[in-house]
Image 1 (cartoon, rainbow, N blue to C red):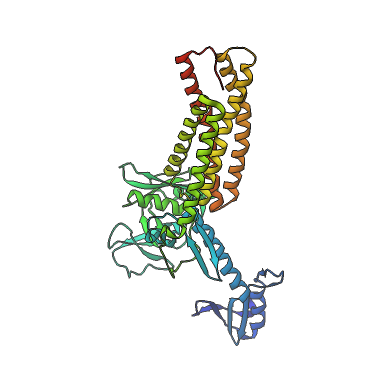
Image 2: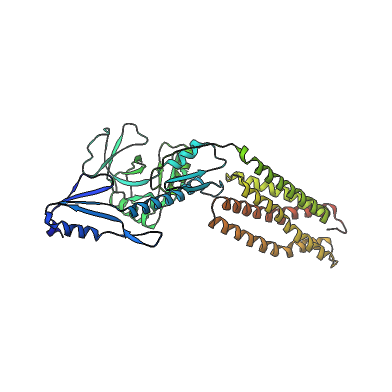
Length: 447
């Protein structure tokens, strides 16, 4: 093809076009044919396929631009990727229960209950968080210095008036990270530790082995976080990012790196902060449901099992307190699905105690004595308790893994409730029963 079209030179072009000029205009048709051969099909939702580029030519000038189908497909991919990345940033654990959905062709609606402020949310969402590791060519104090070739000049994040000249091709990028965690460096300052996937670890290891003594830049959103000198071969695929971070900034940076970089910059069009008054009726209804369920279970257990029922009620109170404590520790937002999970847990929490107490009743009929009956009751009911709760916990785990938003919130509340229920039923109530029996030594017991 080169023999037919001659020299190819790139021409100044608009942002959405590529223009090239060939030295042999008579080869225009052959050049257009060669460019069109590079096209890829774009499959639409209707099943039809079209080319991803449009090629036109006149004289010695060839113009290439994306087709309308490819532009629409790219926009759709960008929105879908942005939705998923925003969801991972805002609700990484699955406890905030946000609403994140697409509106129209180019808008995203984000609703997050219980967050501190809109500015905090905007900072978390609006940061692109594009991380790269680039070779350093030099260092300068002039922002307008000529970098030479295709190199670029980027400012230092921590050193005012310092700029680095770096190569544009990254050795590795944030897309090859598998984990990033807030940490502290050897001087006790906040930092972020990271780990690459096997591909990134291999690239990083090869580069450090071949460039010992040379600096390389850790670049985040076109700012050089740090430019350490490679002291030795780093084969493990892990490292640490240091800088003038606060603990909050290092934690947020770790979240952003784990979630991944946004495919495009976001523009905030509107923001609203809504007080809790609008949902107060639903909150009140959920609170009443919890109180009614809690009270009904307490009364039922006390009437059905007497003193043993009182022991179960004490364990139930402790169970609910533990659930709220754990939800607070992980920073969960208690919404209606979460309240539903607590109501369900209250009903399920006494199930284990019912199995144990009914088993003790059966053992008392064999005249083995109250001490032996209590021991056998707990031993023989254990397998049924574990089977029932393990199957329910598996269901909660599936809901957490497959669901999002309110579904994950319900799954987390249910899962925590199962763990605390088993603990209080097997250990707390047994401890209270054994302590009471050892102290009173009754000849007979009523369950």
